[in-house]
Length: 122
Image 1 (cartoon, rainbow, N blue to C red):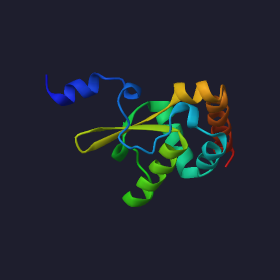
Image 2: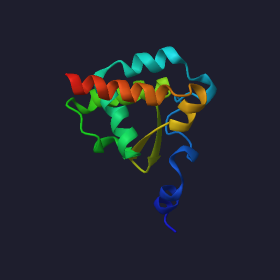
Image 3: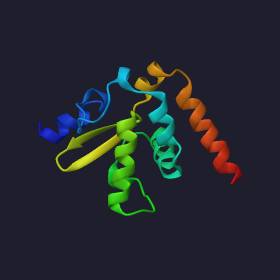
C-alpha cells in the first residue's frame, strides 16, 4: 500500500498535527476561540468546514492572497478551531468538532447558528 493510501484511511483527528502550535484539547481557551471566530473570513472557513468536512487548504476559496489565507488558517489552528494534517506537500484542514464539544458543550452549534443568522440578514 502506498504511503498516501495509508494516510488517507486514517481519520483526520487520529493523525498527528502538521504543526506544533495546535493546542491540546485541555489547552483550548474561550477567549482565543471567540476572537478567532470574530473575523468574517475565518467564520467563512469554519462554516465551510462544518458543512463539508475536511478540505485541502487550497480547496477553500478565499478572496485574499495565499499568504493572507495562510495567516487565517494559522489563527484558527492556534485558537483550537482546526486540525491540520499533511500528506506530502498538501495540508488538509478539519474542524475539531469533538474537541470543541468536549471543551465547550454547545458552543460550536451556537456560533454556527449565529453566524448563519447574521449572514442571512446582511
